[in-house]
Length: 231
Image 1 (tube, one colour):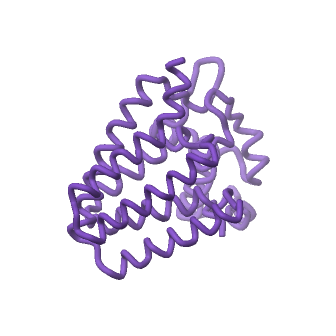
Image 2 (cartoon, one colour; image 1 turned 90 degrees about the vertical axis):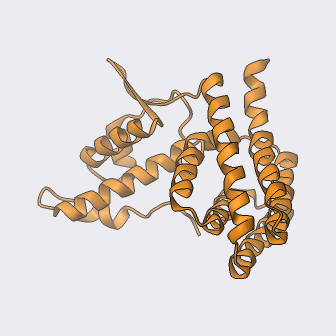
Image 3 (cartoon, helix red, strand yellow; image 1 turned 30 degrees about the horizontal axis):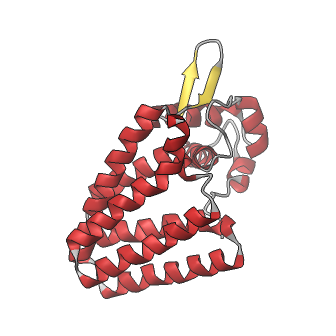
């Protein structure tokens, strides 16, 4: 099942007399769809985001698209350039390294908390995601793996039992997701092996090991992207 929101029905109901609640819901759905296109790499860094074209693609007016682009600019995913309009924000090497360092530190902290607080029920849910991810990897259905990867991390955030930390990490995950788009098959396989190792550390209650593995996981996964800028 796709994680992208279905805006077709909301778009069909859109009109100049739409209630404020419906308008806000539509704006949020459009924002989520554009955010997904940016973080998944469908909209490449530097690509122009033309309101009319996006509105046509999503079957909505320009108003929610304009609002979505403003919201995404506030998140740092979109840049609004004079006489050029909105474009997908580019992640320069220095900023990329800084965000990876921060995300790695926070993921390590969350893994430490997860080792201290994870319930057997949550651990079983994470294990199910690992089984499904490895099955998709073995069958070559890698298109589903980003969704499962997000599910794995969301469950670990729940296990960490710190809502503020989870919110910070989700924001950073969106900002850094483009770093992991072009991973090779071997890198993807390594990612899922590391997921399994993190879960084992969490289940065993080894907070220090869980934190170390989670930090290394983020840094290793981003290294391919960062290496492209050092050549």
